[in-house]
Length: 75
Image 1: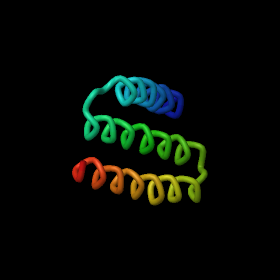
Image 2 (image 1 turned 120 degrees about the horizontal axis):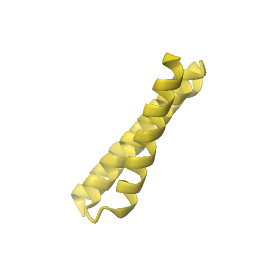
Image 3 (image 1 turned 60 degrees about the horizontal axis):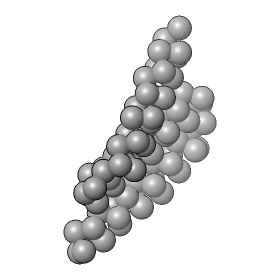
Image 4 (image 1 turned 60 degrees about the vertical axis):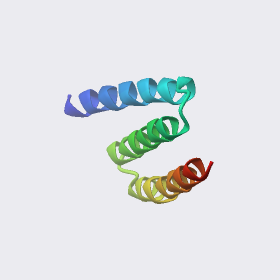
């Protein structure tokens, strides 16, 4: 029962922040919303006991978002 509640919370977070990432007009906010989507996806992997995918998701995509932040600041 607790896993279902966590799943629905993560699904709601992914849905809301993905829409906000696409509709936001500011680049920094959009990148932040994308970071929340990717971290929630990593949470889903952790919920499914895919520990390797959880680590890869957080390491690779969090690093990618940091590069996106740097590009956004330089623009």
